Image (cartoon, rainbow over all chains, first blue to last red; front, side, top):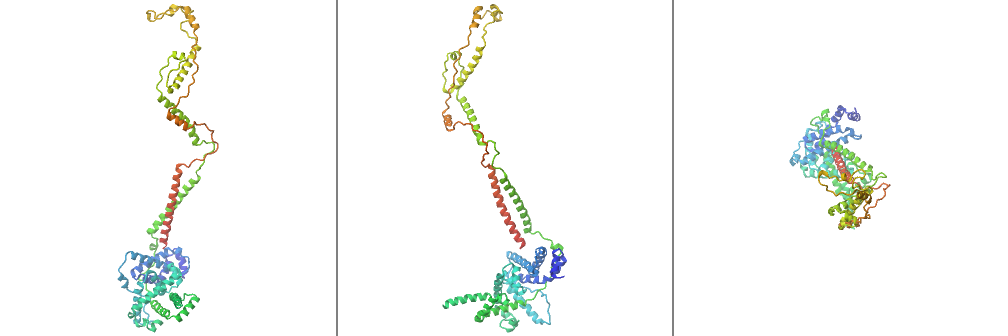
Length: 202
Length: 313
């Protein structure tokens, strides 16, 4: 069944059809939640809340991009969790000691060697720390745009903000992350450094 | 001029710097894109800025998609809508809003539908009050006169017959006049019937008429029969006194002032046109109720909208 048929069946109360959609989008939903929350347990809770809200809110879905609609629910669930954590602040070091979860795609030797796979994991861990230090609004925009590849319009719909706001927030987020990476460039592998022509082409 | 150019260039540079990310993502319109490209050829700072931004975007894109640590499948039990505090509050607020709205409509309808005018032909309370006032005042005057005037001593008949007016204070004249009138009425009645002092002579002997009572000596003098009969025929009615017109009793000073201030009420014809009544006191309470319900309605609607926004968020 294609996505539209699954959505139509799920709106009629077909839980099995909805769970097909869950299996299709749960990795992406969890990735977005983790990149925003920087905590695997909080990300799992936010993802579960988002799918429950999506199932209960299906009657209000009026067509268009289901992915953008679902990501909006995931983003709102993450915002709620972030606000709750602000009311009960945790230690600032917890955000830095992130444990990178298992990637969805296993190592593919035909694409990259184990060393390259490990270097990419290390880069991801460093980037996650830099993203965790961004303000909430900039972090969400950066994750949806640069991590998930959403367009400006899809991000505007997911966040419920104007397109111009997305553009300005994204520019500021990239500038701050760039400054963070340039300050720790020595931690990056050679092929990831700015001075290297290979990193520009990669 | 150089400062002006620098200022212009600085603002254009700042604008261009803000557009670099959108230019990188292909989100600029063709005119803006051309302008940026022209600026990049002239501005090394923006060119370097673009290069570093491109490097950052490339690195971020290499972050892998993560695998969900567990299944997030939805079951029937999990998918049941939970009654959060916001949803419970929303239900109650919505019900309260509907109830207050219905109550406000009822109060407004009663305010508009209740009549302000009386049906025609019905006397207004003002006229009824005017009619009732003189009766009350007269009774009060009479009561005051009775209180002030001491009880009158009985007036002897000789004084009445002589036509002498008893000497009385001004407050007693009216009382005395009334008694005189009552006495005259009774005398008139007596004059119309012949006074029989003794028994008819044909029927009784004089001796027997004067038989003493109780067997004792005769207490009354024996009256000759001829004189008795003559006396009965000669009896004439008592001369009546001219009617005494009671003069109006002067009122006490304080009552006199009130009489001057309040002219004697004159009966007025009943109004046939419906009169406009002043609003009764309960109508002001109705207006206050309307205002209170209106304010409560605004508060409930605002709260309901806020709770609804929280639920949808």
